[in-house]
Length: 362
Image (cartoon, rainbow, N blue to C red; front, side, top):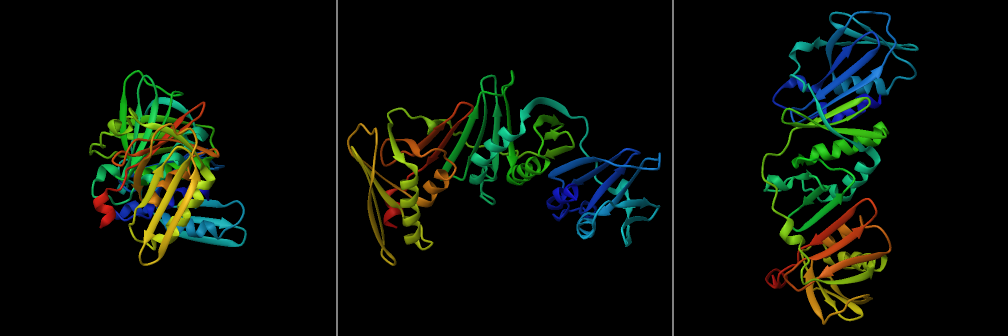
C-alpha cells in the first residue's frame, strides 16, 4: 500500500504518453519491483514477496485504479498473473484488473553512479529549511527549483522567490570536484515525502545520465534537472558594512502576525526603525487601520537605521529559524536584512529584500 501511495503523484500527472498513468510491475520469484514515471520524475520501489512461480514477468496496471482497490482490501493479498489480467484475492474479495504489455512503458533510467551516502534524517531537515521558498510558476523558470551545490569544502541548498533567499550549508558532505544541480520543485517535494515514508537511515546521491538520483534500500528516485541558470546569489549575501543585532523571535513573530492582519491581502510595506535599544515597527493601511509597536533590540551598536519590508516575507523565514533569539544583520534602506542561524552541523541564512520608497508610496 505504501509503495502504491508513493507513486500516485507521479502516475496521476497527465503527460503526452497515456501509458504513464500505469505502474510497471516486474515480478521475480522473491521480489516485486514497481516503477512509475511522468517523464520528469521517476520512482522505482521494491518489496519482498512470496511466490510459487519461478518465472519472471512484467506488465502494466492503471496506477490510480490499483491503488484505490488495494486501499479497500485488508490483510495479505494474493496475486495471480495471466496473459490479460491480474487477479487479486484477500479474504472474501476476489477481483481482477486488465493489464497491458510492459513494452509500451517508457525506457527507465539505468546504470546509477553513486557519488556519496547521506544521512536521510539530516538531509530531510536541510530540505525543510529551504523548500518552503520555492515558487511554483515564476516567470523565471530557474527560480522554480532548488540549487544543490557540493564542492571540496561544503554542501549547500539555495532557494529564492525573487524577494527572499534561503541558503543552508554543511561541511558534513564534500566532493573533490564541484557539482551543481537545479532540482524542480516537484522533485524536491516528492523526495521529502519518500524519505519520510521510507523511514530509511540513509540515502545515496548519484547520477544516471543527465538525471539526479536519490536511492534508499528499497527505492530509487530519479529527477530531470532544470537547465536554466540559477541567479548569482553570492553578492547579496555579502555582509560587509552590515550591523549585527539580536531580537526575541517569539515577540518579533507575534508583531509580524499582527501586521499581517492589517494588510487585508494588500502589498503594503511595514517600516522598521532600528535604534540603540529598540526596534520600532509601523504600518498604516488606510482601508483597515494602523499599527505602531516597539520591541527590545539587543547588541545593536550603531545609529538609527530605517528600512521597509513586506512583513509576510519576514514571517516566512522566522518560522523555520530555531531558538528563541534571532540574530540578523542590517545596513540601510536599500540592502536586505540577513538572518543567521548557526548550529554544529549546519548554517542557515535567510534574507529579505527591502521595499523601495516608490513601491511603498504606490
